[in-house]
Image (tube, rainbow, N blue to C red; front, side):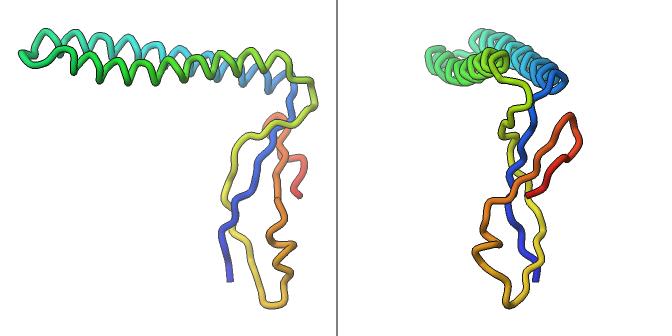
Length: 128
């Protein structure tokens, strides 16, 4: 029988991975700022076209813009933390799902042990 199990992915911090993460965070910040500008534009357009409650429209757009601004702050925080990460340290990089073969007689405890994959500069270096 086969089951699906979540496996942690860890990334080893290198100069290359730091640069890659910095670019990724900067790009996400840029995209979120663009979304905020677009939402402000849409808000003004709707307010001009609408004869209804402009405060209601403003509240809806404010909520959406504030959400994106919170994400921007989060990525700025991550950028700050990136500078303080020592090289060769391991950081969590999410999870993947793996297909695991199980058979009668297997140890359930061994199967439930936390498995992980460690990646360094895009290459898998360890599977535990």
